[in-house]
Length: 119
Image 1 (cartoon, helix red, strand yellow):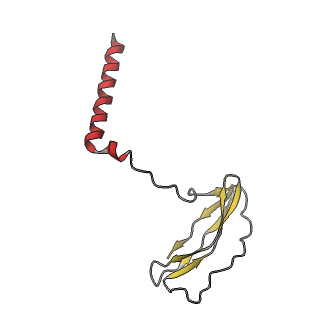
Image 2 (tube, rainbow, N blue to C red):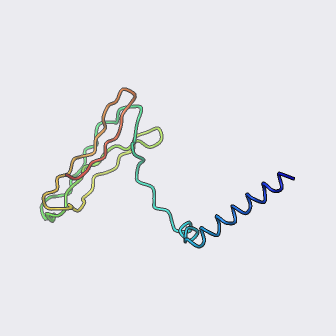
Image 3 (cartoon, rainbow, N blue to C red):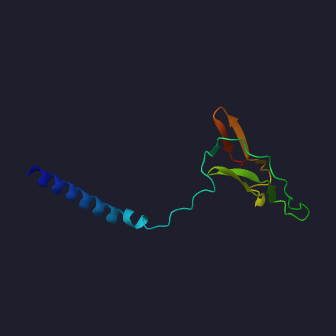
């Protein structure tokens, strides 16, 4: 008989929790599309060194607006191999912003990717 009472309490708690979610709007939020995953998980680690960066044709700076900058490509580690992410032109957040490039740092147990950032 104790098990029936236990299950009744569990069911009552679950129903109460469900009602609270509906009333608070949580149930509605569960239907919202999730954000897309980032292009790579952070920290991105690799057991081996990345290859030498590829030679890229840099976008011509002549005629490029001063509020844009060329960001060089970088190797990403996906699964068990490196994949090249090509360079791109991006808007500069401010006229004084300076881009610090992506890089791979050597650790004792492998390599860790340090994403580029604005300073």
